[in-house]
Image 1 (tube, rainbow, N blue to C red):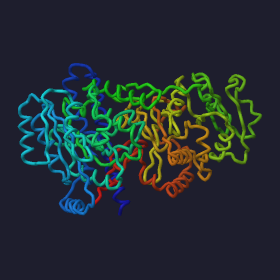
Image 2 (cartoon, helix red, strand yellow):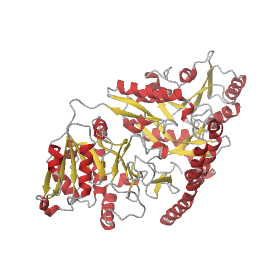
Image 3 (cartoon, rainbow, N blue to C red):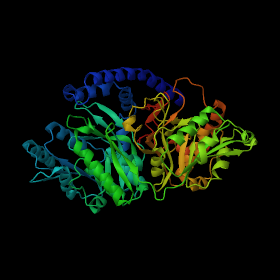
Image 4 (cartoon, one colour):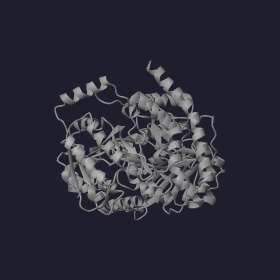
Length: 632
């Protein structure tokens, strides 16, 4: 029965995908006629943006998801209320709400979304930042009289959002503070679910949820189904954002919100708290519990409306790096309104071994080695080509032309085609600080590729690092690997154009993944030994690489995609291409993988249980998600 439901959901998703072509064509036509920055664009982009979002296949599937998964009935609410009554401990929340000249209707709706919380143990702490609209005080006082859980302070002078948020924080009496903007909405079960999370993880310092956007007419769009806490993604953008819940005493201990960081004051607060806690005290609720209001003035519509927020975010990140003694420089990525860090190289520069394994002396292999030698600025590296022993007298490779940077070694013929055994034998004989496993099909085009990868790989608690991989016709092969519940491994953004930003910028953001493509994998040599190398029970390079990455994760390391470095596969992308690996070997490895990595297969923490992948690497909303609210 469950398989039939999944099949029906999958068929529905594929039918809806055809609408994506309409969306893409309309978007292309609009930007061709009215480029960004033009007068017509400024006047029309808001309205058109909302319209396009509505017909985007992702949002169409999200409407179906809301109907199937996020529509509560009275029976559900009875169970939840009974759960609340039976809770031995009932966490209490202070909702922090700075207000300034909010449109009356939106302010009332925001406060109403607190009043209708199914979980009743809260206080709403409002700080009005000297609003000039007299309706603001009237509305706040009206609600105060109706519910004693609402407390308010009216500031005499306007101090902007950081000062106003601090005034609201001063009112807080309860152990956990919930950040809430004056024109947004809370899901009716938001506090209930946070309370459940606190009971499950009593040492929680930060709790955050998925979020979406909401129009003035109440239509929910653009859900951000987030991964579990992901440090590198946080350095790219504020992945916590809303719904964000913090321990009140910790917020106060770091000094609250900093004046001068307006626009990214919550990002800055998060980074300063992060420096005091452990990552395992951060917990993620994979459900959209916060609805971000779309308006012309809102960053939910277009983050570039608030350029001062970009500068504040960059400052907050750079100061976080400096306080953490991390040597690097924050850069801004305007196409995704996010950041990335260029790390300084250690001194002296670590040694790097680039290991290329092949079964023959092919032109493809020669092209790969030529591209490394011609396009690598990093000084301290060498290339080791590992070939079968029967090719030890082969004259095809131009070793003399390559010079001292390249050496050829051989493995016995009896282990030919046993990928894991070959890599283990080769890697265990290396002496360099770092190893790059490089597939012979790849080409290097950016001279700084190794500088950037070494800089990232040299950071504390980083396991493996990989670049973004593209075909020669600028189609993505891999922007990180995702594990799905069927035991399959999928490359994010595969089949998309290079220019596509991906889901919330993921195709262009440095971020952690559980696993990365084996085609280019950098790691410290001693980590390879600590993780016991590649698993020789596996048949395919894909699963060997994923298995190795997960063992690094189990050792406490983070695996990072660094998409600012792009390597190219020598062939062009085409659909219905022959499989690289036989179906039989893939199925053997898939079964082994499900049996040995069951927890990761059921829930990849770098992904989200409400997402699915179709058509190679395209993300859609999963209409049969694994996640359910407790008590239902």
